[in-house]
Image 1 (cartoon, one colour):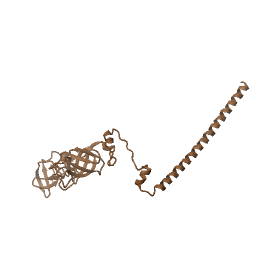
Image 2 (cartoon, helix red, strand yellow):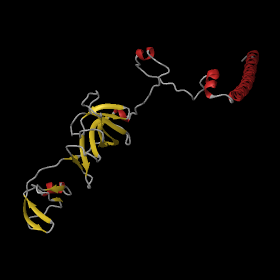
Image 3 (cartoon, helix red, strand yellow):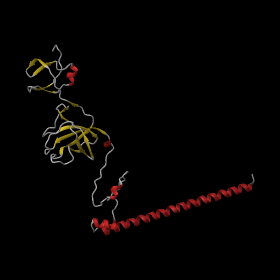
Image 4 (cartoon, one colour):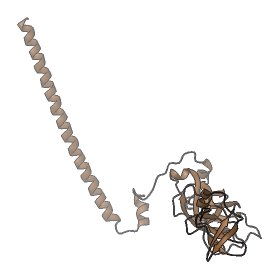
Length: 269
């Protein structure tokens, strides 16, 4: 290998190293200048904010908005897709707007359990399966409710009409909602002479889930043995399994005798 070529390569490497060192020095100097500028800018912004605060601290909020404008935190920006152009054309800034949102779970449909009561100013009692317009949260929809009363054994017993002065359970199909929301039911929206007070019922939402409702049955049985307050009825159910399903159910005869189903007994007993 030629010694001159080796010396030339060494010189080139030293020149590259010196250039790298100079670029590093310039980079660090630029960083220091930027940090100094940022500190000066922060101090300037801080001093300006203090002067603005001291100047506007003595005036009211309305006058401050006129001179300073709306500060961050005093307004909210909302972006809405597919908004009608008629809204912006007929917009009146002096007229307040009510804006509401719907959660992700509220977009699903299902059976809603409500605790409702007929409004005392409404003239007629409400009937099961009569169409009703429900206002629930941000939703308003028409549905066909089923009314029921909860017995002591937590069963929901279907009723034909709403009680006059008591609460009852209403099951209807609609958009799901969290418990605790207020409910208003209306039968007719248009105001006629015969409509009267239009709010039919009020209540609160309980839960959104499948609910089992039992219906009142008319059965025929023959008592074959009576002992004090206990009566043994035959030919009322077809099997012990069917009796077990109705254990605890309330019983009322045509003559007005009340009771409940106790248990199934075998023929030997």
